Length: 450
Ligand SMILES: Nc1nc2c(ncn2[C@@H]2O[C@H](COP(=O)(O)OP(=O)(O)OP(=O)(O)O)[C@@H](O)[C@H]2O)c(=O)[nH]1
Ligand SMILES: [Mg+2]
Image: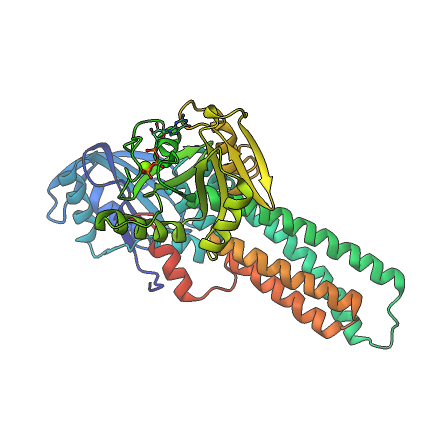
């Protein structure tokens, strides 16, 4: 993505049929072009009804012209919005009429990139715009909006300020080595480290929830034939997605369903029952089951309620050493003398339920929310991405290192270095120091006209 300051334009509404089609223009020539196109004077922050003309002066549509003078616009430049009728041909003609006057078609995300470069928003906020548009659930949309409003950035800024104060203190001690470090000074500093680490931990939690809301959880249902895997998928999906039969080996292909639990998107894959098979089709199904398990975030290993969980757990460890974290589902609890429940067997969670009657299903969905790191309704979640969570975790590690260097080893220089690294990690989130490659990747995934 190239950074330039020429005037750009794009259709801001989706192509096709609709009530309105909006062409957005940003840059120094925006007003001059709008004047030529409408034969009217753009009025700052107000709406003018006008006719839009092509470059030959022929009318193409009538509509509204809005003008946002710099710097109080989305991009920070002069922005004109032309709102015409939303039809594929009309909108195309209006855009063509703008481009014919020497304006360049904007690249995807170029308006948002300009907003970022002109300090109208930071990188986390710009990403929140894209995530708000793409959000697949209300909880994800709420989280993205919170970040767009700047809550995420404000908490980063507050942490940055705390780390700067710590650095000032540490660097002062480096500069004046003769001054003995008093015990009280160190205790006070340690308290400030502890506060910053607590704030950072809380931020990691909220950002991680947001990242999960954004990308969702992938779950593979696997286990021996006839255990009720497909019945469980159907229960979770809320309809008969998969064929269920009392014949072992019913499912052969992978079957994928997308569900949403309290705003958490979950992709569930039902797999063929795992057993040695001489049937080539079933054997291929079994091979695909293994692949699906390897790709999932979470494995639901379904067995009959009569199975002993400690034996199942031992078998799982042996059969899937590198597999994702697993939950054992003891299905068909209706057939035995036991109630639905959530238990634990040597670190592996066990959910006892009946896919047939639905008993214990809420226990499983609550469990899935919990393993996804989603507590409650995702109340504090911030719109965040994996890259943000990674950066926050790096900041937490280096901040912890800085504290240890200072408090335990009195290694001032090393502590200062770690503090610097923690700040650099945080600034990757808001985008103070960001490579052009990363900017290209982030803004390139926006839609055109944003
Ligand atoms: N009583 C009872 N029967 C169940 C339950 N869940 C599944 N079944 C029955 O068990 C049989 C197998 O169910 P499926 O869901 O097809 O099992 P599966 O694990 O997908 O089987 P394969 O695809 O062959 O590996 C069917 O007859 C279901 O009706 C349950 O909770 N209770
Ligand atoms: Mg099945």
